[in-house]
Image (tube, rainbow, N blue to C red; front, side, top):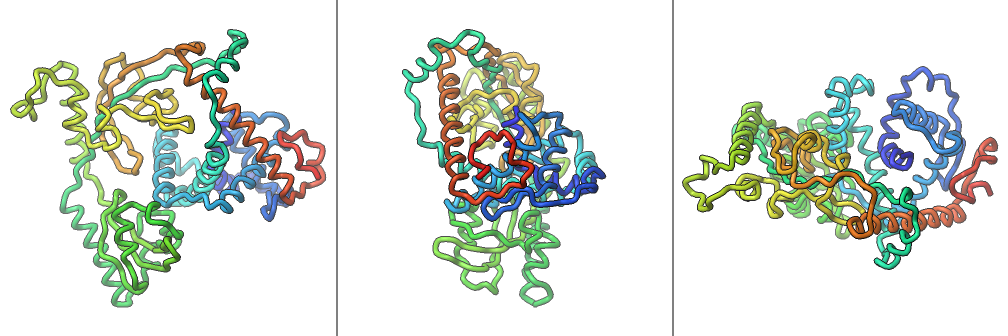
Length: 468
């Protein structure tokens, strides 16, 4: 439990520190450097902020929190330092998508955007800005861990040996898993709205060219990419493959830093771009992003269409909209996916959602691993059942309307070597990965400058070598 909490909490440290700075309990703390790892300092306020977040989440630390919390922060710094050395990169697109998805999850959990702002004592722009750097660091840590463990393999014989003599009550419990098929429709954005956004961007370009304003100033005021907006629209150096293809094509064609690009449409919205610098195969640019607004009428229309489609599928009827052209005698959910769904990730797989994990790709999901909106729609469905339409944010941060079908459900049970071999293999793989990562951390500690406040020297740490 605590490991899962730590993985999540790294992303939230920045938010927690700033939000809780307003809390009376932190006001009383006189800050000080308690650990130094390499050239990175760990402050007492970092530890207290993380401790308070755990209390708010109702979670408990293994061992003495006074020891385990700073140790875990120190371990993250080791991974981050190596990730920078090894050029582990996270694209701005990945950060934007991840932050938006996480914000939507928080809103779903807490009830509304207003409640989320009240909880953090910040507006949504500030919450996004706080999350970006911590999300980037979390992804870099995960990328580094993946690089360290990607070549670990285990044979079927090793898996069988591991579980051969294990008592029944020690076998892993397999939670309920489901397979879900999905049909999504993206509400149509009116051409008038697209024209409005393009006209805004043309106006920005005109003001820059006339010297009435700078690109940086307009980006800070108007760009809807919150992470880069506060830096005047500036993005880090990136390779072509790290950017949206349409964005990259225009960005890499720029040669004059004084010029503003033509308007380019990406999967995130519409942009104008300005070159800052080129360095080998990487480019540094600034941009202004504007997103067309989906009208309530368009959302309602998409929801009604999906509601009608779901009713036809439950009744086994061919939808009237395609009846004159459809040649088959029956119409299934799989048929509907190919005709109606605009989700490119699932359309060619009969709508079957894919669960991509460190262990590989599977169609099975634990309920907690499904997008929250999908999990709510699936909960209570019988196998073969089709949900009512609902709204969700897709992986690209766009609002979509969807219906889902519960393809299969496997109830929770004790793992068996015949029926759950992959799960048992994952257990063994995870143990080998944890061993590899533990050994790596211990070796890094040996070669890293570490200075610990005297009062932490008697701690029982998870990793040996901190006290030198």
